Amino acid sequence: MNFKFPIQTLNNLPTPYYYYDMDVLNATLDSVAKEAGSYGFKVHYAVKANANERILKAIKDKGFGADCVSGNEVKQALDCGYDSSGIVFAGVGKADWEINLGLDNDISCFNVESIPELEIIDELAGLKGKKARIALRINPNVNANTHHYITTGLEENKFGINQWDLEKVVECLSKLQNVELEGIHFHIGSQITDLLSFKDLCLRVNELQKWFISRHIFPKVVNVGGGLGIDYERPDENAIPDFTSFFQLFDEFLELLPGQELHFELGRSMVAQCGALMTKVLYIKSGVQTHFAIVDAGMSDLIRPALYQAYHKIENISSDLPNEKYDVVGPICESSDCFGKAVDLPQTKRGDLIAIRSAGAYGEVMANRYNLRDLPLAYYSDTI
Ligand code: LLP
Image (cartoon, rainbow, N blue to C red; front, side, top):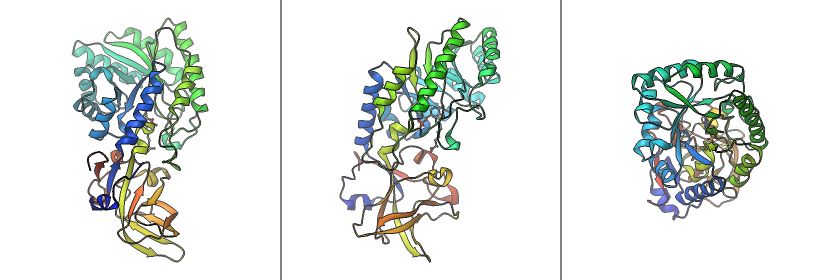
């Protein structure tokens, strides 16, 4: 990321705000498109990572589809110009109105997570005289070796259909008139940095494909979800994740049937590094051992450190004095409202501008109004 503006320009914007470097975003998207495209793989961007209109439109303009997990995400994708044929709808608890919205707009596929959900989609599609395309989200029981809050593909997680239930699901499918099996879907977790977890997923998918073939079922699409991690420690050195190795691994280990398509739902890896949360230092307060830099952004603006003990690199872009250690904390009445402990920062004073990096994914979109704070604004490098 390149703060290519005079500090005065960034300083004059009302903090806290999300700053998006559109060059980093576009370079990342070009890399995904090139690497996935070279194998003919299709990527639906996971809208949950960042549903900001400018970002969504930029992603749509590069030809990606949208992976949505709520009716409002489907609406947002449609409003931003995504074609309904490029929209997939996942989620463990789709409400009837959300299913109806998907049906009315002829979205490309519902990722289904249980028999009761399958039956409701069948019923609602029947009432509209439509046939819903569905993919079965199967819990592959593969360990993603990531934070337990963002591991999704283990048997103990709430997501997906467990393998021992597949027989029943397939039997149920054969009786339903208004749904059509389009594919099989997997997702093992998020912020996965050890590619071997994806290899395990490929091997499991290969086994499951054999199970389907033995029952004369040939899913047209295999969707392996998202999850590719990013480098939170070195956002500048590794601004663009290693999409080459990621897609290569699937090409090498996943055995597709003739004519079968391979789909992905990447979120974080496409948008994390283009965003930073910009905040100003309100006060420096010295404790017994620690200096606190109290900033005007809080966990309501970026909840990841409080919720997942997530690390985000913190920079003071106003000062180049010698380093000292600071706990960088927000103004919210919770001890967990802390962006980093014992952070090395150049000597910091009131009014300095701080960048909390790699915040383009699961940042702005998870902001809330706790303590009745205002939602953070967003600015873009190409329109400041
Ligand atoms: N597909 C499904 C079914 C998912 O559940 C997710 C993310 C994705 C795709 C996109 O995964 P990604 O490529 O972004 O890893 N708020 C958490 C992350 C939650 C991820 C939820 N599912 C965080 O801030 O780390």
